Amino acid sequence: MGSSSLCLVKWMNCGSIIIVSNMIRRGEVKELKKWCKNKVEVPVRQPEAIAVYNRFMGGVDKLNRMVLYYRVFIRSRKYPLRFVFHLIALVVLKSWLEYTEFQKAQKSKNSGFPGVPSKGGRVSDY
Image 1 (cartoon, rainbow, N blue to C red):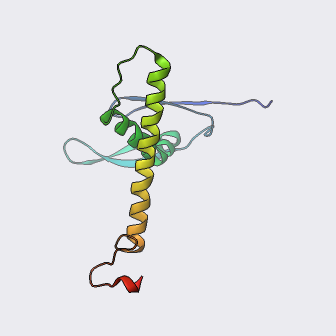
Image 2: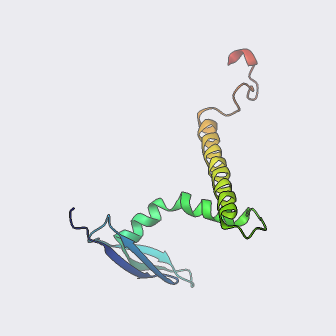
């Protein structure tokens, strides 16, 4: 077994953000501009681990937000049953997110649903 090293980063943004990464050993610090309350851009130093997290966090945060909005309420004291319903909710919500992404990709390819003619088009054109 090789030795693994971890990088612990604490960044003060609106609150304290702590990230542990085994991918980034020693990250670079980048300058970026952030809007302040008085509507002025202020230069801020951001660690590379935070930048990588922000680049790839979109799907996970969207799924967590949807799980909170569309919670499956089950009144049971049995933990496995609650766990199974939580997994079912995750599967349904993830499939919904994949479906909406697929529809956006299809809409960008052609403006319409498959088999349905767009404005001024005929069914025989497809």
